[in-house]
Structures are given as C-alpha cells and as structure tokens.
Image 1 (cartoon, protein in one colour):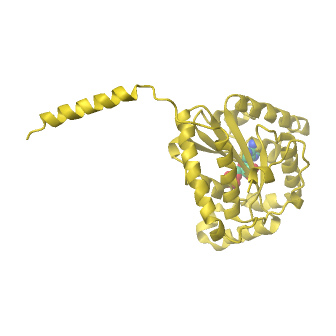
Image 2: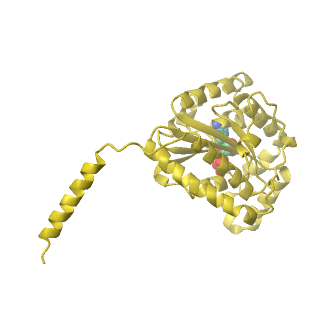
Image 3: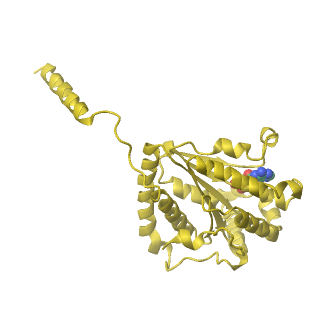
Length: 283
Ligand code: ADP
C-alpha cells in the first residue's frame, strides 16, 4: 500500500480531522496479520540507515506531533528499535527554558536538527509554537500567526541543506484517548506517565483540532510533508510510519561511498603481513 500517498496532506488541501477515521487499519485484520510486513520494513530501515550514515550526504528529520497519549513515545520506541543509536538523535521539547525563551522560537529546534548522515527524531517540535501557544494564547495572535511562514522558511533552509523532513500527526479519537488514560490509571507501572495537563488539555480538544488543522494546511509542502496517521491501532501506526520512512529513504538512491584507498593494494599488503607473521610464529 502507498501510505505516503494515502495519508499525505497535499499542499493546498483542507484538513478536517473529524472526518479522518483514527481506527483505520486497511485490509489487515490484526497485528499478527501485519507482523511480517512490519518486520520487512524494520530490516529495510536498518539497511537504509546504514547507507545514510555511510554516505554522509543527507539527513532525515522526523517530527512527531499528536494529542496526549497519541503514541509519540511508542512510535519512537518502534522506529528506534531497528536503528543504530550512533546514527540517531531524539530530542523532546517541553515548556521552553529561560534561555530558550530568550531566543527566537526556532532557535532550540535548529540546534537539535540532525547532522549529515543522521536521523533526528523530534518528540514534539517547532509546531508546538503554533499549537499549545495558539490554544492558550501564550503570545498574541499577531505573533503566532506569522509563525507558519517562518516555519516554512525554516524547513526550506533545512531541506536545501540536505535534510529530508517527514512530519507525522498521530491521529487518535476522543474515545481512544480516554481508554489510554484509563490504562494508565489501572497500571501502576504507568502512573508516572499521568500528568494533570493531560486532563486540562482535553477540555481544549476542539481548539487543538483547529490548531492542528491550520498547521497542516499551512505547512504541508512537497519538501516537508505532513501525514495524518490513523493511530488508534498502535501496530497500524507503526506499519504506516515505517513504510513512509522506508519509501523516503529509498527515493534518495543512496550508495555506499567509493573506497578512499586502493583495495587491491590493501589486500596485497594484508596478505604480506599475514605471511610474515605466520613465518615468525614459533613452530
Ligand atoms: P510529553 O507529553 O511530551 O511526554 P510533558 O508531559 O512534559 O512531555 O509535556 C511537555 C509539555 O510542554 C506539553 O504540555 C507541551 O505542550 C509543552 N510545550 C512544548 N513546547 C512548548 C512551547 N514552545 N511553549 C509552551 N509549551 C510547550
């Protein structure tokens, strides 16, 4: 299935999240049914990351956004489980520190953007500055409303310098969020995950919907697309996201770099050393 095509917000599209089925799972009946495909993408992802690292030409930035309990952490666990940690960074963004707040809003995100050869994952991202900030009027509208263009410019700079950007909105519905809250209450191992703000933010459900819709309508571009990923089923979310990442990396047609040494000569030298050392070994 071409999930990139199916879930991508095309530039100029109107977004109506209430019309998107968060429980979509395509033709797959269950997790078990999709497991083989998930495994295939996992191993492809591993190979592609190796090439990304070896080639050291491009980088990949994955931005994860969603409501509380949408599964940002779970997605990171899934994607990371296949990646080599040496080629990967994860950055989470919370309420800005005093130092961060004293800079322009993009400062902390630009600093965390992945270097060449690296995969960078943003757990929340620069979009918080047109989401929570807009919903709670943390800055005047005259300021946040200009940020969409600023974000587009920022992403263009990254893209023009070799960073490929994928932005995933993890779409769960209100019933699923409540179910996940209950699971957290019922399981002492998850109590640490409960925060007061999860419950207060739920009261702003519709305001967040509008803010997410605006962000995706104004900032889904060909070079930094938004994808709305049905995420009620965690395994389907993982499957769709893995497929889109694999497809994006495959499109880069990466190759291992040419050797910087003459391999024939090096092989000869290796055998010379081997012979010499064999000879000098005590009989
Ligand atoms: P998470 O939910 O990501 O696991 P927290 O529970 O600590 O982590 O939540 C982080 C909080 O920081 C969220 O409520 C989020 O809206 C807030 N936040 C992130 N970026 C900003 C920002 N730029 N301005 C204000 N609040 C922000």
